[in-house]
Image (cartoon, rainbow, N blue to C red; front, side, top):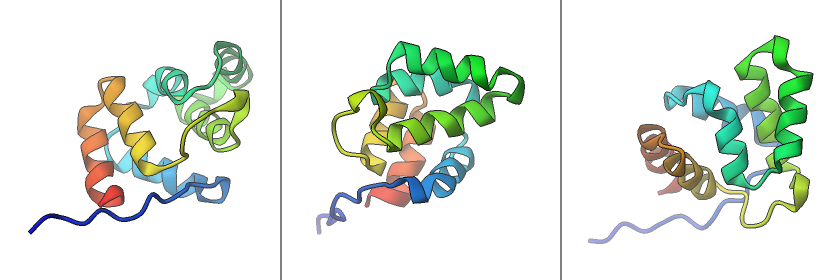
Length: 108
């Protein structure tokens, strides 16, 4: 019997903490926040601003700010704000294990 996929769940800013926690639990390398932001559609300038503004706070804070910008559709981010989009972005930056864990827990 084929697995039935859940309908596409739209993510919102109110779920920022949950999204961040899922990324960390999946083993995502926080230092890759910049690459993830680029793949998700944020501009180089936005990412450089995050890097500059939160440099002293570490990668964890930069990741949180990056996710917040994505969820706010900064830089005219297109496409669905979903677990599937996030998992696909993770795959594209080489975070395959994290992508698989998120897909398994959140996408089906």
